[in-house]
Image (cartoon, rainbow, N blue to C red; front, side):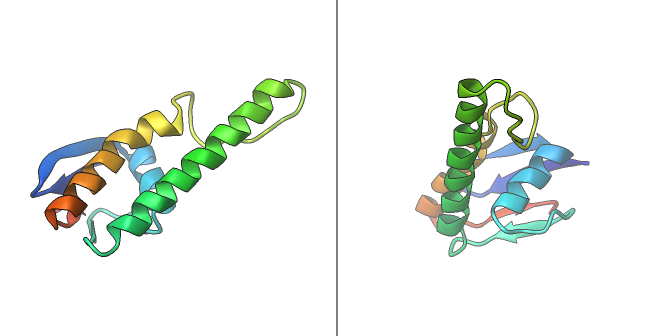
Length: 105
C-alpha cells in the first residue's frame, strides 16, 4: 500500500506503507487505508513528530558515542528528521490554511 497524504492547502506527500504507518503511529493514529488529521489535531501531531525526532536522534548519538552498545533505533538508515520533514511541512501549511489532512479518500 502507498499512502498519499493530501490537503486542500498544499501538494500531497506520498509514502510507502512502512513509512506512512510509522508517521501515523507517531501522531497517534492507527495505520489504515483512509483517515483524517483534523485542523484541531495538527498541533499535537506536529509536537509528537518533533518529540519522536528528538528521541531518535538521541538514540543515534548514543550509538555513535558508544559503538559497542546496542541501541535500538526504529526505522531504516534514513533519519527520521529527513523522512518526517515533508509530512511536517504538509501539516504546518494545512494548519495555517485551516485545512484537514486526509489519506485514502
